[in-house]
Amino acid sequence: MIKEERDQKSFRKLSRREALSTAGKVAAGVVVAGVVAGAAGYYAGSATAVPETKTVTVGAGTVTVPTTVTQTKTVEVVKGLKVVMGMVLGGYVEGSTWDGRQVKAAERLKQLYPWFDYVYDEGVVLKGKDPISSAKDLITVSGANIIFGSWEPAAIPSFHRVAPEYPDVYFLGIVGSDISSQRNFLRVFVRQYQAMYLEGLIAGAITQTNKIGIAVGPACVQNWRRMAAFYLGIKEANPRATLYIKYVGEWYDPPKEREVSQALVDLGVDVLTHYTDSVEPLKVAEERKIWFVGKDSDIVGLYGWGSTDTVAISFDTRWEVLFYHILKEYLAGTKHPDRLIFLGMNHHISLPSDNPWVPGQTILPAVDLQNDKKIGLDAISPKAKRLISEDILKLIDRRRTQMLIGAYDPFSENELVSSGEGVPIPELGLEVPPKGTVVKPAGVMPTDDWLLGKLNFQLDGIVLVK
Image 1 (cartoon, rainbow, N blue to C red):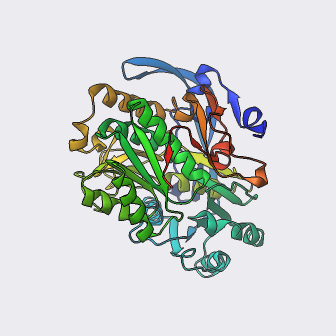
Image 2: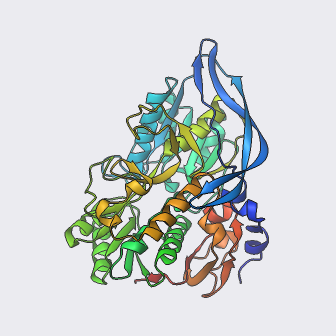
Image 3: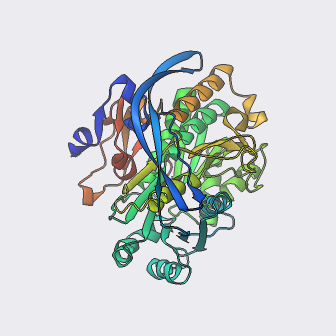
């Protein structure tokens, strides 16, 4: 049986205005207060938000969304404090859109803020190294006062054991499926699924065979959430399209990733993406001359992997926005920060207009479409864009704009129906919902803990290739 908790605690009915707000609680037009170095020390922005509403233009129409008038004050913290983030990386930096992009994020923050630095230990999970030893070395040898685990196995259960030994250190752990935390052990993620929904709109529009494929790493909530959003976008743009998935079983297994990708293409898939960490799926797409959809980072613009002849679209996860959100809390001396942090497209940091990363842009959202250093509709490959109708292009632009201001979320607007495939989570008393079960109705926003830790099923209509 499915626990009643799914309906009673994990979802709630929203008013139309609330439903337009990401997670029903994050106001549009969020102002991220800067952290600046001053003569008297370092300061962290602290804001008091006064709720209001405003009407904004979205595409051809208007919508009323929650907003805030933000009154900012500064809180002086320890003079001369240097924040060093120690990164316990599960995988390797080179050739990875995951760990590599997180290091790029830390490097950007170092360039923006003179009080910030970072160090890392890579391959910790893949090499079988003890994450506790890695974390302790980063603290005692390198002076790290924030420790970040890039893979869930790099943080769970190790950070639970080591965090009490260092009460003044923030420990951060990526959420795969487990959302357990402590006072100074925070669980973190970015709402990548919002950009993946946009990618789904694009994938559904450019497929010629109506067959789209994903090479999926492990079976976990993180990947069901991703494929669910991607699938919702596909079906909205092209109801005739079918999404095929096949599991690799690991985040990083290049030979298996290649094998799975080839099997999907052999089924007639002409648009391929992956929830793994090597470049093998991209290579398969290039070899088989089909479209590829990138994830986690701008693989063309940031890394030079492939070209827009193959890469139809990518999204970039700006981990620097997430890290900065936490840095502000640390600088302000917060002893009891939020323990579950899940930032979406309507969270950002400010950039100088002459920044080298997105030239001319002064706002960097936590996640966005980005391909070949272009953003939004401009990020779509010129060749792929010619395949997309004007109506779908307008829809993509409208949905992106809505999510940037916190006025739309695909998981609020759409119902989620189980295919009967998934994995039970016994510790939470969750079975896999039977096929056809409407687990979440339309117009209801799931809670963050449900999206991060309880979405344990594949959506009905997605085809699992075994």
